Amino acid sequence: MAGVTTHRDGWTLRAAVEADVDALVRWFPEHEDARRWAGPSFRYPFTRETFFEDIRWGYMASFSLCDTDGLLAGFGQVYDRDQRIHLARLVVDPARRGQGLGRLLIERLMEAGRELYPHDAFSLFVYRDNEAARRCYRSLGFEIADYPPDMPHADVCDFLTRST
Image: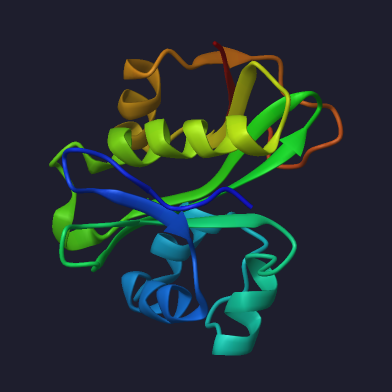
């Protein structure tokens, strides 16, 4: 797995640990929050055990964005999907939203993904009603692409891609 990457700005992207996921649980007090983040198949209400299972902990590269004090500010996962680096379960601490951290998280995840997979393209899914996320992804050059035929939820989600 990709190592720790600390930049001059003090933000660090590192491999996520269980304590990070324990902190994430508090970021999803409502079913709608969890659905927007992890999709409609994410079980809610969740337990610690189902949370870890539903994010496929241990099967997918998981990363945490941390501030200069080492506090969790964002989380995301990457995996290989159809010759692209796929970004999944992207989230910024609700108390820190609106500060550009979503963009920072995605940029750092793309760097980490390049270390893990030999691809020059990226992809992600986003709910059509998640306008803040859609704006963020568009600002990073992601565009709507044909929805993969093997995936559910085409009625409520878009599939976005970006080439390097």
